[in-house]
Amino acid sequence: MEKASLPDGTSSAHTAHMADARPEPEAPRTPTGQYTHGHHPSVLRSHEWRTAENSAGYLLGRLAPGLELLDVGCGPGTITADLGRRVAPGRVVGVDSAAEVVARAAESSDVANVSFQHGDVYALPFDDDSFDVVHAHQVLQHLPDPVAALVEMRRVLRVGGVLGAREGDFGGFMWAPADPVLDRWMELYHQVTARNGAEADAGRHLLRWVRTAGFIQPVMTSSTWTFADPETRSWWGGLWAERVQFSALAEQAVDYGLSDPDELAEIARAFCRWAEDPDATFVIPHGEVLATKGEADPGA
Image (cartoon, rainbow, N blue to C red):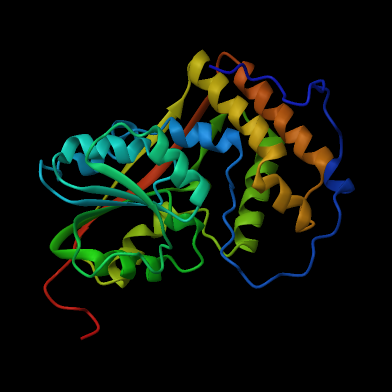
């Protein structure tokens, strides 16, 4: 596991009054649907940590051998591969809008019934009624129109098929000890995602989105990721110390006039301080929904 050291080698000295030094924000822009996180190595390390067990436990009881499954926004494909093992010999396809990530997933996969392809969540490259299960993990929070994406997922599901969707809720994140610099990180994250037309607090909206998209029999649950031991604190704090300075999130924060490199470096130091505290805890809540495609199109 990576040590939670600051990637640029700067000291942990506190930079005072960063809010006073920030440039004035630009005028609001029309949301474009830009992916807030991007694909910096620190982001991909986070995605590669995910498994069916730690990220899709709510769905596993609905899986069985022979089912055909689509994993939307599959990223590097670690969850996809796990799901493939659970439904083998059923076909599993992972689809993602980032061609380079899809290529990486395909190259690293060793599960015979799993394949990957490039695709758009708003126009999935599959016929109607193609899959028994559609899974989406941490996808809808990044989209300007999550309901339209869910309608498209519903299209490719067979009647009686199951949707499994799980979304984090940044507004519900909890951490200790308190740190005003991390409070600022959370504020900044919401500012950037709002500028991108995304919903950082997606977990709390998931049930409404799924119902609006025409799914029936939705069942809402929740679960958490918790980082509260030396290894996971070091991993999580180190990831965010990098992400807040060097990922697409950092570039957008500066480009949009919401922050500057000095403030981002200060936030990175705060994550390192948090990771080194033996009493530190970080809890990430997720909303989860299982729902079904009914017989009739809700718009018919």
